[in-house]
Length: 384
Figure (cartoon, rainbow, N blue to C red):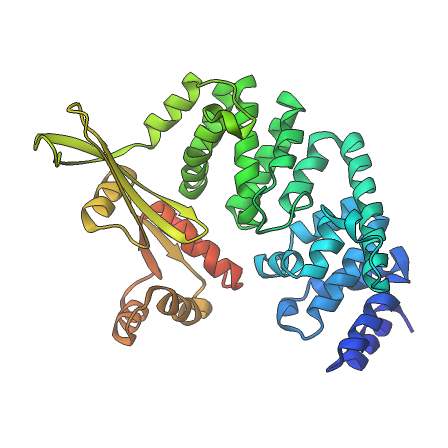
């Protein structure tokens, strides 16, 4: 019986039993490197994240991964978003894959937890060796799958950021490769913050290259770069203070969109700076005023912006569309109807009369396409 058949037998036997799922993890982990190919074929299935055994199989894969951390890192980074999140979110896999706090668990009275923690300590040492041998590429790979700190902690991968920046200009290539993967949904958007922060810090070695690269990226990445820049260049308590740089100011200027309105204090007409970005809350809009009279005002909100802000962004940046394959059109609209609260009539109008499932700002379209691609619906963004 080959490994694929053995794995299938273990999965079938484990259904409905937590204890047998744990036995599956132990049995597959005992195969060592021989388990890689069978697990990767199983995890690579289109419906993997919906399987009852998905959590156990990922735990087994993390255990096997100690034999080749670089292979494991690359494989998980290439999986659909749902699989990547599943691989990072459960507490046992935080220990198994991330390892930031594993040493504290080595002495646990829980035998299985202690053994898992020992595996993680070994993994962490392997990662450090890989980083020293593989340079910035290895560290960027580690940050992309959250190998530094678990999702939901206050550190948000900044340990990895500092380590990447230490490579100087040599980090340009792996950082740009990572950002391009994030832009097309090929890696976790959650890990984008530390990668963008590292890119800004490395950008001082070649500002012209950095600005040209960012100008080619989708709007949600440029918007995130706008948010991360001040952290990189201004805030001393971030540990990354290196002073304001002209190329960051040039980037800020290139991103500005204005709406003409009256100052609430002096009533003169002034330009409000407006925009959109993506946060943990989803799509966010904002506007801010800095009037010559001394008045300062800021406002933001979640979801689509007020019409005057959205119209100004569309005029400045053009209209974009989210397009899916014809066979996925109805499924895509059903997901959007759920996300945006469309009525049945609105969804039906879009099915009948429009080529795209959404038309709007570039950021809206990239955000929506990432959501649809996370549901394996093959969305893409096109300018009108």
